[in-house]
Length: 596
Image (cartoon, rainbow, N blue to C red):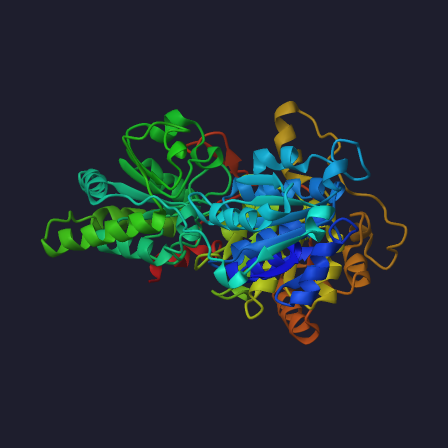
């Protein structure tokens, strides 16, 4: 045992727990913690420009790789309140993230001291634990509990608030005697899984809905093995996209009101049984429940018991970690296959493949200004299978999910439920920090990009290269489209005549913010595209610039101002505003069903 400051003990615990990547901003009330990081040397820190940005960087870092837990650090008062959006985004999507805030001295907490705020109460609804640590001796146990909670059950974020006098206090602590607490995850029994499998095998047109819990469990390979053993098609959710490669013959498309494929919705509507694993039946996936559930039986497997039955009551609910459930299902399926007792679903698979080969939206437009569909077509051609995409919200994300291709887990990193504007750039920096050898491509509309554009300077300062594709229509496009129902277009245009952009074409000058000048002023590189025939060359140039300068590279694409992207209120009534593909040349995605 040795006597040390609580912050020195905390930093030693972080290193032993494997959480060694921090993003944040120092300040008076958290400076003791920063001094411990400096003295200990085991934590790498990236200086953000805004604390919300730091929280999204930590979130992106956590999402990028199995086992990652990003840390966000800030001082007292507004630093903690700035973190709330980041905590909400992580909590909503079941992402482990540790936020650490400084705080006024314990004796001052009830005296309205400078930058003293009850961050514990503010953060409680969007965390698995929020705690202001009032006793120095509680610091090791609080950090120990935080890591257990972040990893147990449905993962999620934790906030620990450290009064400055608690940080400076000395305690007896021996890191060699410290051990992480056991992680608690429910595991389905063989009997439960046998019943689930019996129900699936009794169906004529079964589907597996693969949710983000499979990615959290690192169990994508087991999902594919189960699907292949049973020869049953898979519908990934938006958070589960990549659990099975897009070009796999059993990948039947995504379902939903917005981020969906035409063939995915049609395949789902022909099913008679659905087993959902690690998913939560999000409303943008299901649409109206009467349409979604009609004529089908459901099994729902989720790590969080209270998630089962939250949206609708399944025919069978099982509380289990997705990885444990899939391992058990694979074992049972192999036993049934060896015994020759599996049904032949080849005709059902062929039906799904036929729809996948034919039901597409057109992407090959040659219009100027550029139609967004063409951007995603060229992205598919320019970026390889190992590309990791990062996006959050808006027509850009919706169209990207409809038209891009993802070929592995954690290759589509998306703030799904919360969808905060501004999340994309800082999250991409966190992903780039985690995966320096991968190509990271962020996707934003112009408004999402402008929200936290200052964080590009972080990428320039710390050499965190990624490509940021900004589809610029100078509109709040998704809001403009939703305002159609009110017969209005109110406060959604970002366009203005930029007096400092005389060098631009007259049309582009009217789009307002000169994103290239801003990006370059922040130390990054940037390319602008106004003709669809130049997209491929622009992406190649961006890759070359990223490799040469090791900074973020912005590719701004000037779009037509108004494009209505396919969406609807029911999965059987999605509005297709644009032309549909008639040939494979119109929709290069059609070749996917012919691969594998």
